[in-house]
Amino acid sequence: SLFKYMQERNTVSWNALIGGYAEMGNLERCIELFMCMEMEGVKIDDATFAPLLTLLCDSESYDLIRQLHGKIMKCALEHENTVVNATITAYAECGCIEDAKRVFNSSDGYRDLVTWNSMLAAYLEHNLEECGFDFFLEMVRQRLEMDAYTLSSIISACFEDSQQSLGKSLHGLVIKKGFDQVTQISNALISMYLKSNSRNVEDALKIFEHINIKDLVSWNTILTGLSQNGLSENALRLFQNIHLDHLVIDQYTFAAVLRSCSDLATLQLGRQIHVLVVKSGFEGNEYVSSALIFMYSKCGIIEDAWESFESSHKETSVTWNSIIFAYAQHGQGKIALDLFYLMTERHIKLDHVTFVAALTACSHIGLVEEGLNLLKSM
Image 1 (cartoon, rainbow, N blue to C red):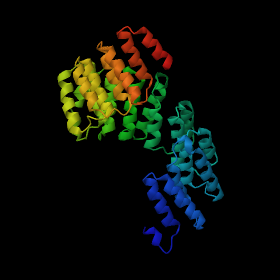
Image 2 (cartoon, helix red, strand yellow; image 1 turned 90 degrees about the horizontal axis):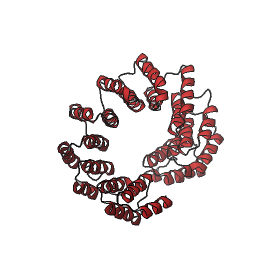
Image 3 (cartoon, rainbow, N blue to C red; image 1 turned 120 degrees about the vertical axis):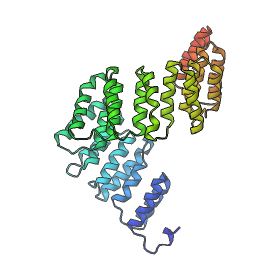
Image 4 (cartoon, rainbow, N blue to C red; image 1 turned 45 degrees about the vertical axis):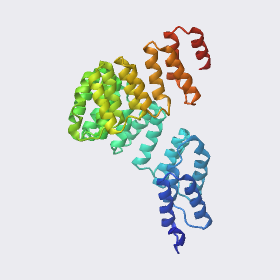
């Protein structure tokens, strides 16, 4: 309302208003303001387009991105860094990598590190790892001064055994550049070593212990990785020290340690963590509830698994899948199938895990015909 009564509304004030609505995620209002700017003949600059482009992040936005890109060209702003970077990201977010690549290629001579990082992220987020690795090597050839984002992004893409050599080379580069105490990069290295090969667990633990300032991502990455590599005892021992870093535990931490409790069938510790879950307000969280269901099921207490399901929000298939599996594996296939059909009645979106759970239930109680019908409906 204050903006409405301003006698002189210039580019800066319009951009501030658009930026404010962009932060709130209000695309419709941003577009309205942009059109008003054009109608009033106010000069549009790079700070006008950048916030708008950050809101366009799905395939349905493609036509609007193209229109804005056309206006950017018309205003001769196609070489402004902030606009170039935002346009690359917008095209990539809506799945149009070739368009993002064209914008990058046309920005030669006007690029900054964010431009390179935006294109690298575009490749990696669309699982185009080979393109990403080639692009990173070009960054090396160009002698660019890489930052934590560049290195953590490319390290995070090294998760296959075949990429182990590249991952170790990147680790060497991190040490050479003096980035080994950057928490974001250390977290990416821990994740890489834990995902690529179980023989690299010691490397991951050394990096974790070497981090001076561990954040919650550091803890969640190491706890999840240890659990996934069958080292649940190590994970639970490590978890006992998390309070030393004065961190507030989140749903990923709880999910990781509860998985470790499930692997070891340690009911007493599982119950203690459940109390902590309730105190922390995560009892309704679907991922935590799913981990609780799995833990109680593995410990043979289906009643407590059901109570955890009842306490969850039940908005997606996550907890439904867990409870269906729990009943199926406890030989109570009829209850499991009843839950499957209740899920369909409530229009909860089914996924491949749901069908595997339902088929497991059919298998346990010998419902061959029912199982075949489920297979046909998949």
